[in-house]
Length: 320
Image 1 (cartoon, helix red, strand yellow):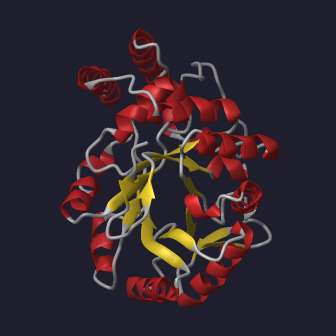
Image 2: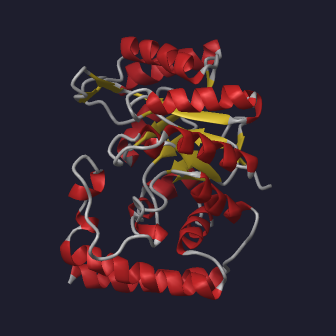
């Protein structure tokens, strides 16, 4: 099983990890807890060793499910847990950013309790907080690192300027930006910067909110509370263009006795600078399909070039 090292640590991760935003149900039309637990167990049984979560995913629900699952399996020592901090909420589920020292010190203990562990492998700022200095945030993370409560420091949704600045106050081991076949913006700046400065990447959104699973049709709609309801990719003519493109990618995958989901995952983890791609897994079946990519190489360089050509044509159509 291929393992990739988080920079300047002895943490080794598989090329794909379990993303648990959907596990919390929040903004994804809900979730079924037993199915979520089975999905996590199946991914781990198939060799995946990283689980990424966050307090805000289901307002504690996702972290709690991860904690209970790992406790039941008695596998904490060989599983890498990545979680986040910096988003606080009130009783009405109104969210605001807060990466102050006091907030971090509270959140780390809350997360440790929910995850039923005494350390977190990768601890990440969830979103930049404009009201707290980057120095205060990083100094606090440095303290947690020295205390042994965390093993690596990361940031999520930071731009290059913010990455540079927070790195000036302490060691940054990894970043977590969105990245998939349809959202490749980080190739322009973040990925080159990370490669040059030896910063690892945990990328999220690998299946573009389900678009790259091939399960949607042009007539699909989304309920209130589902983030896709307000996403331009899932609306009107753009949605039709994406569906047509996914169908072409599916034809490519069919020729290799694979699926468009596996094509999207394998394409992502083959890109230079990508350490680990986080994949949402709602149930056991999805976990099985996603995990197969680590055991079987379905596609080669020519397939990826063909996929890139298909995507480029869609981008031109959307631009026009």
